[in-house]
Length: 255
Image (cartoon, rainbow, N blue to C red; front, side, top):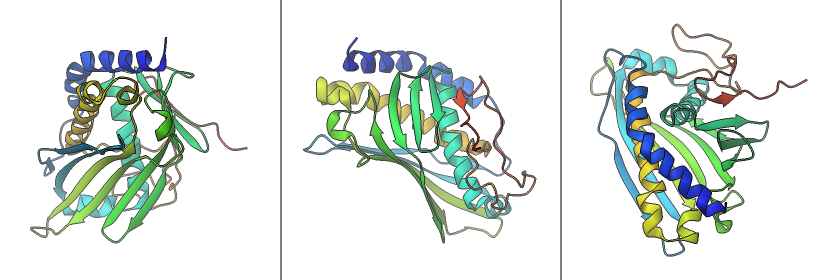
């Protein structure tokens, strides 16, 4: 089976189960009192070179004390983990994330079926903005032109002015930039926009809506384990053992 056939098969499978799985994911935990997520937006475009830029965003309102307790590097890392966990849950475990010291692999069930291979995440946290970015290295879903780390996936969080002292607000954007999809290269942009692109938007909107529960799991890697945790959270930030439920795998501990 060719790379393009694999990519199309994956998109067809994910599209078939996406709606049911998203509903199942939303039932896992009730919303936090005082938290709300505005209707997510979508801006997706393809330039003349064939590079895709896709941005989904939503404004999240939550209690001000909860936001203050989570505004640190530890919770930015946990937000990143929440994205990958949601992806695995919404695909009913078909898509899994494998961690190594220097890379992240998004796989179909297991390696060597690597859909997307990312470099290790880059973090930025200063003032009222936090960013976590994964540079795209290669994978079945990436054309040859898009390999090598020029394209990226990132989550961008910005604190907004508080309408009232007890209310906090953030704007969260999930952006894919300079991405060259293999499906568009091998077949056409029309096929890409009606398969992989639509599924990406569906999944990302579901992830943004899920943030109303403020369910940010502990990181697998624990890069910022020493960062202060919010009220009621573990201070060590130690990564939990991998579970079949979210389909992720923990890295081998350093010796």
